[in-house]
Structures are given as C-alpha cells and as structure tokens.
Length: 90
Image 1 (cartoon, rainbow, N blue to C red):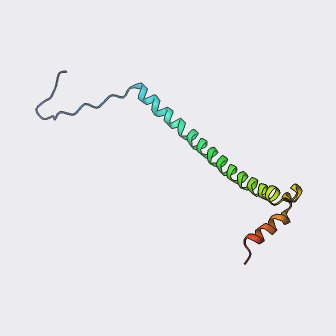
Image 2: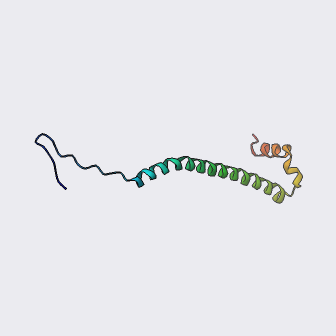
C-alpha cells in the first residue's frame, strides 16, 4: 500500500469497508424485530391462558373429585360465590 501524505496532512486510519452481506444482515434484523415481539406476545398470552385454565381445572377437580359434588354444580355462579365466601370469611 502506498502512503500519500503531504506536509500539512495527518494520516487517517483506514475505515473498514462495509460489505453487502453486512448490509443485508442489518435489514434482516430490522424485519425480525417485530416478529420477535409478536412471538413473545403470543407466548406470553398463551402462558397466561394456560395458567387460568390450570387454575380453573384444579378448582373443578377439587370440587368434583375431592368434594364429591356433581359436575353440573361446578358451572353455577352461586357455587363459586360460596367457595369465595368460605375462603375469605372474616
């Protein structure tokens, strides 16, 4: 490499050249960010839904199997109101 410097100029360090591959990878990352956000949102919502389903399933299992009550009473609002009053009674 030939160095050309004149009396008043200082040497500048060479800047690395950007290749086209790097430019493509940056544009791919920009398009993947919304996909990652969407994916994490979907996973979060599925986990929350699973937790609610597991909690409800556990309450139903406890009421029907352990409490030996009928299945039709599980879906009545008065049953869960009574359970709530028993748990949080003053």
